[in-house]
Length: 451
Image (cartoon, rainbow, N blue to C red; front, top):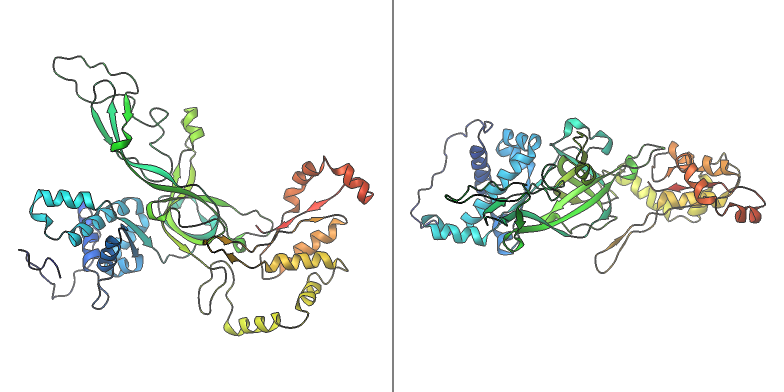
């Protein structure tokens, strides 16, 4: 209740709320977003105002917003966030920063010194948008969805080391000592395709001093790092979930750009649901060549990251596979506890193929996978199993692995056709040694792997 004794007038609407309209100006949009953060309530609670206050007291300058709540407050505003997330998110963060300064410094608006102290003590607040949009596949991301909000599931297969990305560059001309402030765009791509190799302006645009001739060289600006601002940045690589890969195809992947409080939260092997802006960037190779190609690479600029589980709970949604009822799960548990289940299931793989029990057991292990382990330091080890099958005749291996495509599970993908040339090159150096052992001239390799 702090701040209510200040010299202010507070009002509460007692009539029916007006019909929500789409804000036209950025200032109106930011005003609506500020009102949403401070005035939205569920019953007698103000979730976002209380969440923001708690995060600020813990020195965590971020706010997680549910897009469904924005839709209940103003449907047009929620639609604008989905269609123009890059523009609205910048205004949303400005509104959240203003709300944070209002909460912690309610009396600071009366003096310039108080406003300046509040601005120095509270940096920009990061807004994370938790969306309830339908999950999309990698192969559904097309050019028409560029610069729109998307939500896709997958597996993080690599994570870069945390790096520092500049949010404000303090530049100084080495000739006339003039100052220039730049705010680089977020995401991948840097300062843009034009200019020098570093992306900085190549010509000093400061006005000349009266009575002196301006003689600034080409590429005059130097970065003053001590006066610039930086944030944490990390690049993740998200791979298509195994259950979403079509039979016979290889999984696709897409880079993710995570910054500030979203960086350093995920380790490789984690199944996640990524919500972000489907964006494009120009690769460094294209920049260095100086070409004017219109082809650009795609990536997702994260606004929210949700860790998902590979197994669905009762009544829950599992984006990585089929859903089972409690009765089916109980039947599966009873089947797993039965005696000789491993041998019985292995013999059920490819019943039309005689023999090859060892290959069928390997495919059984491949279909079920291993046990995921969580180490004391929080690192997750994937329980997926990869099986390499070597020898002849290859027809049994291929047929047994392809039987999997006729069932309901999609844990493995048979990629013999795609790896045929690769295996020929890899085994070319050792084929004669293997041929002596197997009394053959060639050794055929097939590899059912977890895609």
